Image (cartoon, rainbow, N blue to C red; front, side, top):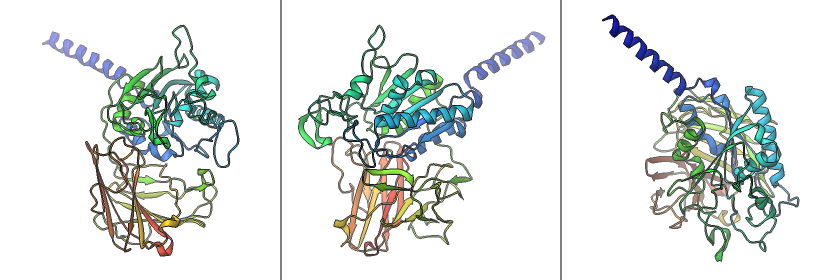
Length: 454
């Protein structure tokens, strides 16, 4: 019996050691800085942050960077109103990495980017000192060899694989002639053939029938760990649960406990209200805008009581906080001079988030004669047929979505009447989400959006 007890003590002791070595304490997990793509905002990383949190990653070590003027210049070497250069993006990222290192005490961070965000990551590591501050670099759908590679078409574009920016980044390095900067662990994730910006034909850049001189494996890099996520689109290769699992495994060396999102009972939401200028989105505070947030009925989209939040946006851009739960769908109403009164409907938020960023829109001139305009959007991925099922106000499939490569993230309906329930249903594999909202009178300069989480 004594020998048996000693054996059990030894066994449990060994298991405890294994547990300690395979499940790091939260303070040993590196900070991760997430970098969004062209024209986008930090809000696209919401579900990725939720998945890391659901696997024990501390929320204060997960930072989604909101790039100012996020749209690239047509010519990277010339100023363009309301747009940013590759150099400006790199310097913004460098400053954020230093801020995060100071705040956390970590010597190095992990960087994870989607699309153009990967350009900033590569540039920072190669020429901005990132080899000293970055342990892992993860690129999802980054057009590392260009969206096109043609010296005669926009030769100085950041997205031209034959231009100076990308040829400089891709210059051979080390004895193997790698395209990645040594000293950092690199992971790229790409689609097999469903990335709209890694296509041999120029259809998605307005040049159907013209060769791009880019192949499906354009996002891959010599010297990196290159992973293919079959069927995933340009955004999903960064924001999908499959991309999260690859990133988690690459950083930690082990599988995540779950790729699902663990709901919280108490949910605290906040974010920025930002505007749009002559060059596109600004990602800067829209001072003076007003925001109201309502709980709505899950079946009808009708408001349930008075506003939960009613605020005017100040210099920090914040509209919250709002304390709610993970079972209540919400309506966000943004009003600002020069914009439509924009009603954004969201299904319940599973977890807290500080990056619920809101960007009002303007009613298109062509839609001003409509009774109501409602849009169904999927920010963290594209709608793809026949891969997905998208039903919008009974239209199956939703209008405006082509068959083939997934490259459209919205469907718009111009309705003959206002003041009624409108439903958007989305299903793709294990993902199923429904958003219910209301149509509002366009004659009063109002429009509505049903926005998916997943």
